Length: 237
Image (cartoon, rainbow, N blue to C red; front, side, top):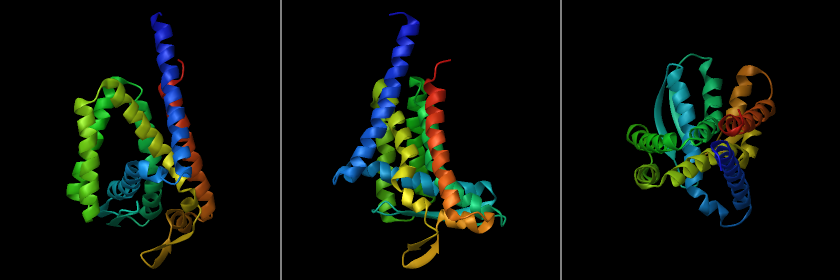
């Protein structure tokens, strides 16, 4: 097998793995114990979502006060300040946080040498966010455990495991949007007994078009990020 044939074989194997990862995830969503198997990735998706809110607030001149993670997989990012126009962008930052992170992981996972760096970086980010922003006992336990697992994999795992792990994380983050598709198409939600606008409902308050339009746009963008990252990472030159 020459170098071109070897590269083509590796590319096809990677694409197959990404496809199998996506199909396996969708299958696990449908069976009773599937959610338990995917639980760590559910928590990670919540972390990406809430960090998306918080980091967007910081980038736009606001303050990121706290990150609350709960055992049922829900979370809240509290933030304040920033210009008036920042609110809809902070809402969008949470919705687009997971697929943007997922696309980055898929791109990084296309090369073995970058996979270890990504695992280390994500592990450290989980630990640092716990120290700086997390305010729930559950978050203080689960996020360091996930961070330690990623750091251990980056330090002791084989190159194939590291690469497949980063790619799997990327798929989970990208398609996680579609697991809670109903949330994208809610105008208002009940959080702790308090009615409030959803993220898409909040965007609609500022940009006139209805919440379902923004929900549809976020879903399409998530799908485009998934397909685009796979094409960039593994498409033929």
